[in-house]
Each structure stands twice: as C-alpha cells, then as structure tokens.
Image (cartoon, rainbow, N blue to C red; front, top):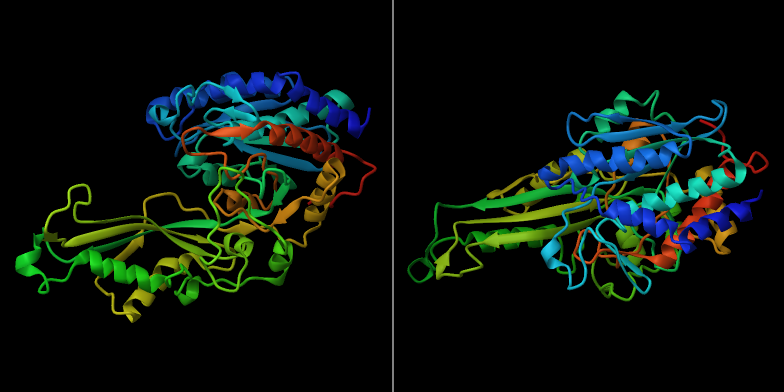
Length: 464
C-alpha cells in the first residue's frame, strides 16, 4: 500500500481501457443544457450514470431539484468528521452538439479515437475532466481502503447556461451538504499541453450591449449622405473610445491593480494553445504587460458581434440603428457594480450620450481568486511536483469564467483548479476532443493529490 501504487492503479485504469469505456457511456448521453428538449438527458446523466459510479465508491448521494434550472447531484463520503473535507466539483452538461458541423467521421455523441485525440462532446468540457477525478478517487480507495479525508461531490448540469440556480443551492446548503475546507476541481485548459497547471480562480465575465437608435428605418445614402448621422459610424467611434487601436482599455475604472504576488506567479509563463491553437498577437492589448499578464492578470474588452444595416444583403442606405454585443473579462480588483456606470460616464465624457449602455442577456460571472500566498497553493504545487517530477505552472486565475466566486464567497472555500485539457481542444465548437496523454497524466497526478490529502504523516494546511 503506497502512493506510488495508487498512481499506478490510476494509470492502469487508463491503459486497460476502463477510462475510455466510462467516457464512451457518458459522452453518449446528449446532456446539452442549451437545449430544453434534453432535460431528460440532464437528469439521466446524474441518476443513471454518475450516481451508480459514486455509490460503488461508498458515497451516499441525492438529487437536488433546482428551481432555476437543471438538477444538481450532491454526494458525500464522510470517514471521520475530524478529518479535512474536500468538495470536488464538476459539471455534466455540455453545449449543444452542433452535429452537422463536425467533420466527416465524427459525431458529438459518439467517441472516436484518432491517435492521441479522443473526440466527442464533453470529452474536454467537462465529462472527461471530472471522469479523471473520479478515477483517481477510485484508485486511492482501492489501494488504501479509505480516502483518509472526507469527500463531498457537487455535479451540476447548468454550467453552460451560467450555472443557473447554483448560487441559491450553495447558499441553502452552505452549512451541511457543501460545507468543506477546500475545493478541488478541474475545468478549463492547461497553460500548455505538456505542462501541468494549477489555477486559483477565474476572471469575471460581464456582458455589455451598446445600442445606437437614431431614427426609424434607413434612408438612401445618395439623397441623405452627409445630412444624416450614420448609426454604424457613431457606434464604431464609441467603441474606439473604449479601447485604443491595439485593444488597450481606456475606461479608467476598468484598469485593475496588478498585485506583485500575481506578477511573480506569471514570470516566465508562456501561453501555448498547442499545434492547432492560434498564434498570439504580441502587439495586442495592454502595453508593458506580457501575454500571460494580459490574460491572467488584466482586463480585456471584446466586441463579440456588431450589426448595422443588413450585412447579409447590403443596400445603399444609411442605417438608423446599430448594436454591438460586447463583454468585459475582468479580474479581482475591478468593481463589478461599477462596470456599466463607469462605461456610461466614459462615453458621456467623450460625447456619446446617444449610445445606450446596458447589461447584456448572457450569463454574468464574478471574478475571484485564492491568494497566491495561501498555504493550500504550496501544498497543491508540491503534491503535483512530487508526482510529475516538475513543478506545475501556477496561475492566479483562469482566463475565462467559471462559478468559482460561488465556492469562494458563498461556501468560503480555498479554491484549487487542476485542468486536464488544453486550449486547442475545440470545447464549445465542433470536433471537441481530449488529449489522451493529458488524461493519463491527470489520473496519476490527481491520485497523488488525493493520496496526499489523506496522508496523516504529511503536513497539510489546517482544517478550516
């Protein structure tokens, strides 16, 4: 009975085909939360697939009805109330399949293996990732006959629609079902395919709609050109006031602090999306910051869609209206309540009072991060290094958005995220895939992490 044997068990689960068999069943369940007609598949994923898996590991479980969205599974294995308790999070829902857009020979709900790539919807986001963690828990239990810590699991089915209802459920069960000391979860990408990564939180995502409504209808550009303000031009100029020509933010309140502890973490960090990832535009974004600092330590404003007139069938007319759907990705230190008011003040100062500003309809996630100097960070870094032989890259937060603020603020947890995917995985797109080497390595490093969490002879952070 040893740590090395637990890691070997986790690797054998992959090598012997057990992981792929489990993932094949899970991907076959079309659990898209973006399609209301899939509601049965969402519940079925929890009741028919995940609950039996956890029951075999000695977990008791229950399904929590969610008044605001799909159900949530809460499971627990309590070995001794005096022990540390870890909450393991994942989500079993996916984005829509986009069946017709996958390349020939691939289908979202069927696993196809080509070389190191395991194709299928949810392989990377998030069925493959929480599957790695469940497999690692099983390996530790099989080797030690106990975890050595208390484990609770929260698996939601609404992450892809903004984690609808999760905040309310966590608030309702903060003192019982979800009370723990630390969150251990896996989502998002590694910094590079071959680089184990630990991130401590997530950037916030704030949707913003801009609208210029000058008049009803469009008017002939020959008869009225030079006489009527063009809504498209007004909106383009307003957008140009928000950033400069290289995308650097010009709204003063949107320019966050960049703590030295965050800068220190990001020294030498290189963002690598893999062979299929886009090349980084190194002259884009905030001057004076490295690419890693721009995406993990700073804010970015993005225009996601811009419409004026009828672009699919242009006509010789001056549009009376124009709209843009935008998003601010923001880090800790940005006042979320002031994002819209600050933009309103900024546009007014620049003469764009005729540009309406409102919160967009898509999901809002708050920025959050664990303090990089917290003892849990060193503990997790050391555990991963002990397994892999190399210290992982530690990031202050994920560049995207996750419901981490719910765990950090409502459940008051230390938050550790260990991703088992990479940036070129095509999550949310056709041809989503998981890289086999990352999954196999992830099984081993998570088995080591869970082993260390339950090792009474190893120094661990104090129980909260």
